[in-house]
Each structure stands twice: as C-alpha cells, then as structure tokens.
Image 1 (cartoon, rainbow, N blue to C red):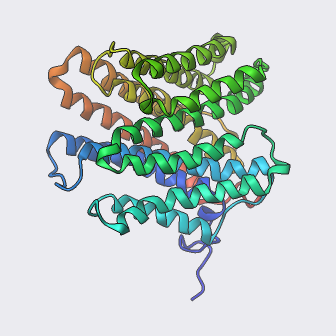
Image 2 (spheres, rainbow, N blue to C red; image 1 turned 45 degrees about the vertical axis):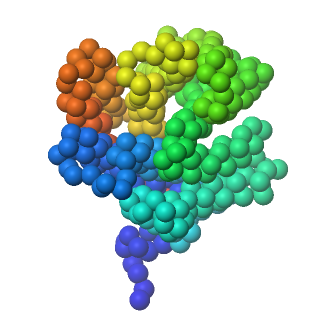
Length: 390
C-alpha cells in the first residue's frame, strides 16, 4: 500500500522531517495532560496502581517523558546543525518516537520485569547513541569545542534513569537527572542568550572562556551531589550558584528584561541559580519550606519558563517563520509564572490547602501547553513555509 504524504504514518510526512517536530509535539501533548493527571492522582480522585509509587511515576514522567521529549528533540535537531549534516528523519525518527510512546506504558510493568527495563531504556539509549555518533563521526566540522560535555551528559542520563526507576536508588537518580538537566541549560544559555541579545538588542554579551568552562564543569560535578558528603555538596552547589550569578549580572539583565522573549530566558537563568542556592541550604541543614521546594524551583522557574520559550522560537524558526512572541505565547508562558507562585509560595503561606495548590498549579501549567499546542502544533505538522525541506 502506498501512503499519501499527507498521512501521518508516511515517513515523508512533514512531522518526520526533523527531530524537533515529533518530540516537541509529544512534549506539548504531555505538558498539557500529565499535570492534570498528577493532580487527580495526588488528590485521590483517581485510584493509583499499588505496584508503583505515584511520586516516582510523576518524577519519571516529568523528567524523562516531558523533559526528555524536549531535550531529545532539541539535540536531534541542534546536533545536525552543529556538525552540518542532514540529521535523523523518516523511519528512524518514527522508531524513536515509537520507543518514547512505549516508555510511557512500560513504567507500569512489574518492577522485576526484564521487558520493563528494556523499554524504559530504549528511547534514551537510542537517542543518545544517535546524537553521540553524530557528534563523534563529524567532530571535525563541529561548530562548538565543548560538545564533548554532551558525551558525559548523555551517558550520565542513562545511569541516572536506571537509578531513578529503582526504589532503593531513586534519590540518587533524581538528583543526578536534575543535575544533568542543569548542565544542558548551562550550555543552552551560553549559546542562545548571546545570539538573542545580539539580534534583538544589538548587544554583544561578554564571554570569558575560563569562566564559561568553570561554570559547566562545576555544574557537571554538581550532578554527583547525592554521592558527596552534605557539606562538600553544599559548598559545590554554592560555588556553581556564585559563578552562574556572576555571569548573569555581567550579561546586562536590565537590558535583557526589555523584551519578553529575552526576559523569560533571564528569569529562567535566575531560577536555576535560586534552585542551586536552595539546594545548598538544604545540604547545610537549613532547608526552607517542603522538602521538594528546591526541585520545584528548578522545574517551574527554570524548565517551566525556558522550555515554552524554546518551543515557540524553534517551532517557528525551523519551519521558516520569524521567531517572535505573539500575545498568545506571552499569555501562555505567563501562566507558568502563576503556576510557580501557586506551587512554590502558596503551600508555604497556606499549607492546609496543599492539595488545592497542586491542583491550581497543574491547571495553570496544562493551560500553557494547551494554548501553545493550538498555535505551534500546526507548524510542526506542515511543511516549512520558505520551501526548504527541513
């Protein structure tokens, strides 16, 4: 049977022409539905599986379901541009998307199941291997000298994932996963904020090679924080926060706050710094608020703000459109800011209504991705408007 190019299952459909298209679509769908599902489960409105901790499921799906759909889609697209090759498309890309979908159900299989272990590793393993071979084979045409950090990060994610899905090592896996996402954001901030500020404000942000590498190496070491003594981990986290904050100030935040798209990046960058400080205080026995506060500062104020901004820019820029923020985009991303207030501030101020604040934050987060989905998914499902293939 010959499939029409308009058929979603045809490997020539626009959805399968670049890595960001299917995975950003899946990230938007999961971003719209997963928080609502979590609110229902957490409130007790939905009966939960007795074989799986609902907290572990929530962490795994937000980080390796939603988070890795974004990270995988971004790296599959960016890596081909860094080394100037065609990149993954067609059937191989469809296989990776299929593995991602299988992973969403595999988490519910019995913990001792071999099939569960295989399916929970297949997507990240396949994606990591493709990206690594792209960077290694074509390293002579690589535009960035620090891409070797992704070798460690991608392999680290595989280790972190397997620690996360085991009850006894869940804490190590969670800390390591978040630490590796911090590294990914550190690299992304360097490469994108400098470009955005130059193109929108005509400002050349200062760069210092030693500082850039110091930030990335210290943040990479911080991914191992749970394996270190509390005091040593706390000191390391504070060093990372100090270095990152120094550069944030150096990068002229008052100018960066003039335009919405840049402001979101600066606020997300600052959110990551606040997360590091809060995490360090916890290591020193000076924790503020609930035990999960530091984690949710990162997921809401860094990932929560920056990821929608990335989706807006890339979904437009890589489909031949001008990467601009329409009023609907601004409203959607602002909802994440409100969700952060509901999830981070209100539970401390009014702890008796904790379940309600989770519900409010979940609805606001989901609303952001519902709005973004209506605007961006049509771009991802259709050909580029400038006539280019990918």
